[in-house]
Length: 214
Image 1 (tube, rainbow, N blue to C red):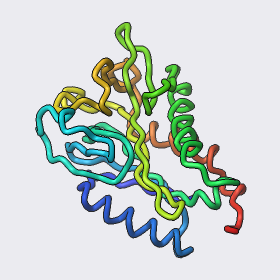
Image 2 (image 1 turned 60 degrees about the vertical axis):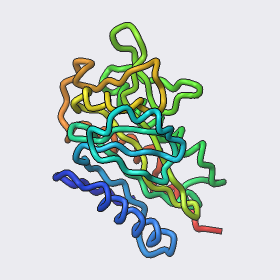
Image 3 (image 1 turned 90 degrees about the vertical axis):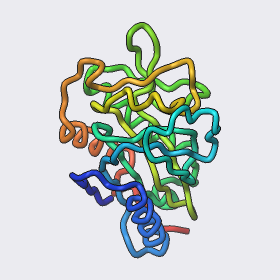
Image 4 (image 1 turned 180 degrees about the vertical axis):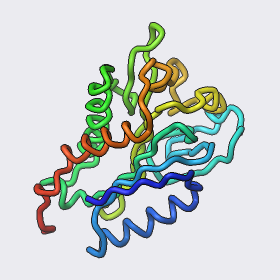
């Protein structure tokens, strides 16, 4: 798997165009799987299940996207990890739900390394932590698959401006808020988070387990 990190914020349209091209190249055997770390300028995205009523105020540009899920926010201080992965080679039987659980596990493992307990919740995609006496989301997951090649991926809150989430109902969930590593008192930088995410994902998708397509 190739790893790439882009230091400057990437416009959403540019990232989407790149992913489309890379997915086609992976599908045609012309490129390796890719994990791409980046940040976006402030924006909202609407997944395939987004409800218009969950867009409270369009404080930033809003992009409709083909990934699963509802509304979410992306912006500086949030690590985006876009994973372009050929599930035909990474799994014995391609399974989207299992793949999502693998991404969730990667986040859980990273949080564990920082001394934070991350958990799944039935009916609430993403990873949740205890904060201020309630549950809050620290990482969102939304994926799309074309010919068993994945794209989009996960967003992990390091130290974004959490007030930017107030323009939407994040992921359509009104009863719980969002948090970040910084908000939880975990003082790490983006490079440290990247290294932890990379190692966690490498463990879940080892190259030595690749198999030839049937």
